[in-house]
Image (cartoon, rainbow, N blue to C red):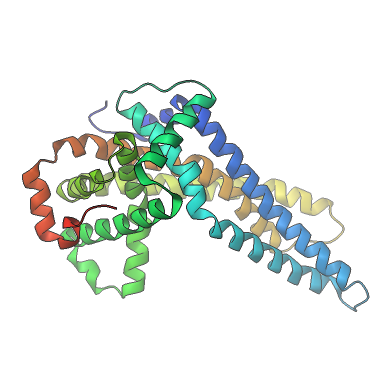
Amino acid sequence: MNATPSLLTATRLLEQTMPVTSRRILVYAAITLGLVFAVLVGTGTFVGLASLSDDPGFWGRIGAVVGLTAGIYLVRSFRALRYFRLDLPHLTAMAIRTAGGDLPPGKAQFEQVSHQVEDTFGDAKTAFALRRRLLDLLAAAALQHAASLQRLPGPIRARLLDLLWWHSADAILAEAARRQTPDICRRGVAAFGARFPEVLRQTLIGKAFLYSLWIGAFLLLLRPVVWVDEALPTALGIWNYVFAAILTYWVKGAFLNPIVSGLMLLTLQPRLEEVDDDTLKTWQQKLPALEKPLP
């Protein structure tokens, strides 16, 4: 394993877990197409209902908003299940690879990591609740090093810390699933706190990669959307940007997020091995919530 984990090494993890990576790509593609379909269905339905009105185009735009809102609500309502059945098994496969383990080929690979996730966390609700608790603990550990963040308004601070550390939380959960020991998350928090400068540096590198490529993907995908718009009898207007944003959801969910989570996995996995009982006890004193068993 490299002394300093790199994004290139993290990207190669996608190659090394191709069966579960392919499944992730296909599922996120289906979700993306579902959101596009929701917009089109909403538009068509409202235009049809308002076909005798003076301005059916206006109602079509209202229908597009309703369709998109319904699609987003549906996606969010199943996010815990998606995380448990898709994202976490993929990250668990990556954790096995980073630890030097072997995975079976084909469908058996997904079945193995899915069983490990189920045996470790039980169900989607438990896993997602543990993720939330882990995010809170990581935020508290970060504030031990950056107390100035306390000056920010509570909701802004909470959202900022979630955005910064959720890839680290996913990496710790994947390592827990690899070891099939959910309580390893406590040592993950201790490792995060003990090596915070290194974790912060890697996090900032990962976030810079994520958002720069996300913006680049948006601008790239905007071009074919505009070409389609030019061929239509009516202009899409702002919906050009909406459709491009929907398409970049696939790029982010299927490729960028697992790469950044892989980077944090490469960073935190060896640091977990360095956490002894004294280090854990030190961080339990700093974070009393860490004394409680997880989950």
